[in-house]
Length: 290
Image 1 (cartoon, rainbow, N blue to C red):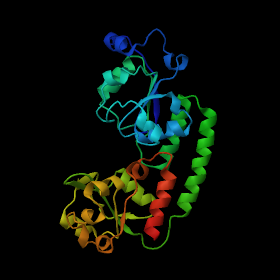
Image 2: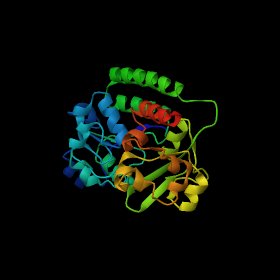
Image 3: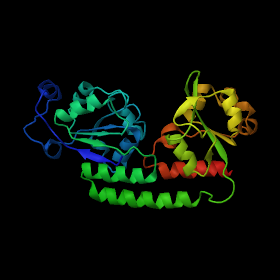
Image 4: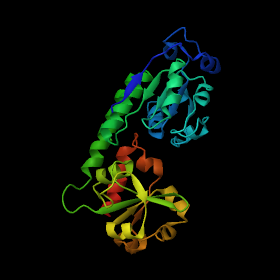
């Protein structure tokens, strides 16, 4: 699904929400005439807003918006998949930027019905999707010149990053391990940001054969036989360090576990698919090459 901008306002059934938001439905051009009050839901989209030099327009973000540091000081509207219309509208937004995964849909529809324009991000895990998001958000924020500059910079960084990824020879097998919470340890199959990152960095997902995430088992880890274990810094810290992570079922028995080949970048950097994607691909590819 490509990025889209939805701008519609209806009067039916929204008077209570309008009073809460303190907005007027008299003009469909509210976002263009009022002082910008932007809410961004989705860490990668928030990064794009800052990269375009429009961070001062933000009045709220979701809990996945952890970069840059300035975003962590803004009011939080909750987790991107469990938003409430009341919480969003209480910040009197003139524009809502939301990741494709944001929801629930009914909350976003209520915000739209209250007269707040909605910009949706692209759901693909690719560099092309990053560029589409930059273009879409740039238009919505009226940052045409900044969009051109950012796009040119990203294209140069992407060309350099992909040129450094080996295209010949045997690709290393990598297993992504998600271990952010207690005993709930999962591995990534296809159709995830983790799978896309492994592929972009020149590795083969050792857990191919299923989509999404599934619990880690000793049998599954041994059968996957990864050359590298890829986790996140937060996951390693939650596990109590690399040694403790490798005590998870079967990991110590894999080639990666025996050699302690664990790569663990910061989560939003590794999986965000925002403006830092070229750097994340370059860093991961360098780790595999080493």
